[in-house]
Image: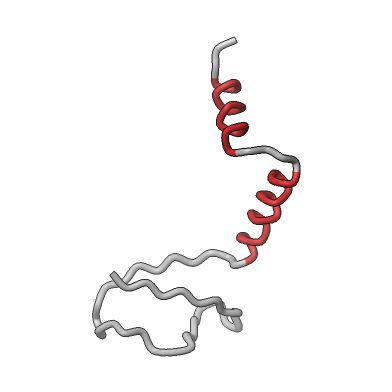
Length: 71
């Protein structure tokens, strides 16, 4: 499996220009997933905020179980 990750700034939303050619054959079928890069920074800020409050993954699991339990 080959995975290529690159961060680009769009100048034309219809065209992506990669920094180097991909080592793939012409006509080969590929899957492309596109997501804004800044979403990672928002998620990391949220994780940092949670960690700064001393909330652990176990605390989150407990809260989810509590919220899903019948009253």
